[in-house]
Length: 293
Image 1 (cartoon, one colour):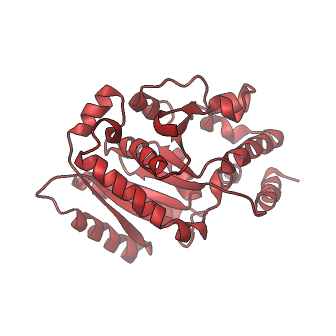
Image 2 (cartoon, rainbow, N blue to C red):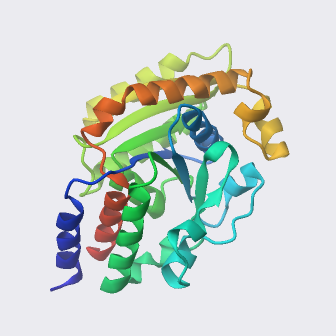
């Protein structure tokens, strides 16, 4: 039995009805669009709506989440896989009951996992699926292999862009590249756009309409619109303070929009329940795509 066949067997075993978390992958076509700020603050907003939320920092090597929270994790995903740590060991407690996992360099080493290591990882992630309501994956920036693999494996994507022409072009380029992936499923993926740092003279709806039109016409992709966030200087102030915006500037326009996004996402719970498969399935698809290369 080769590795691909072993993974197929694991998929069947994991497809039996079990509690699964909702996985939301936050990504962008380029860096510097505020993706990690949105991930952190959205996690807190969802937690306030009585969801148990965890962030997986998949921006390997940069550690944006821990910098924004001002918390240095003791262990990361690599410690779970290769140093005998258990799942609770690598989950760092953040503000307002959110947790986060630092990816470290762990994902980069998953290509060479043995069958026993794969089974070990999946079993650990099943434990996570059964204890967390929502997992937010904060990907790296740009159209890298790691970003594409997480986006391809996810059933729910938040695509962040700004009104800058280069940002819009790069967002479309990510969608175009994603659409070419053999294991990407249009039917099983919800993609929602967030326009960030929108000024008074810029029309956020125009950004969405442009991307929606070209994505539909040339890629046959249905792009939804979660909303826009006005340009707000409290974001940079909060980053300097290493605290979430919605904690230190709760009345800011950024905080108000993030809270609105959280409520909208909770309103789609019934729709997402039809397609959510949990973090276990995300990693199964990610590992399978690497083995099949």
